[in-house]
Image 1 (cartoon, rainbow, N blue to C red):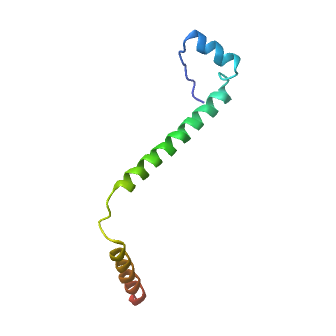
Image 2 (image 1 turned 180 degrees about the horizontal axis):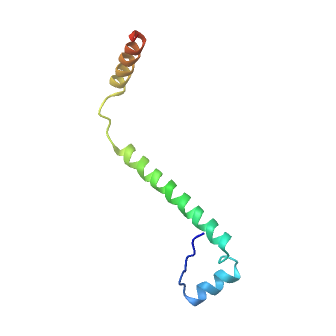
Image 3 (image 1 turned 120 degrees about the vertical axis):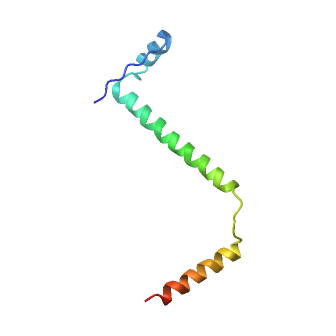
Length: 77
């Protein structure tokens, strides 16, 4: 297990201690949630970037490519 030292202003440390937030399990829970939220935020940002891209092919062209691939797969030995 890794030991981590955190320096906090006295008033925040006191409030966190009184709220039970400085217990190892509370800190671990907060860190897990923060890391999950960062993954969600990165995913949302990536999805926004993808949504902003203009497609290189029209829907009709994509459908045609799919049909060609299906025909080629069926014809393969």
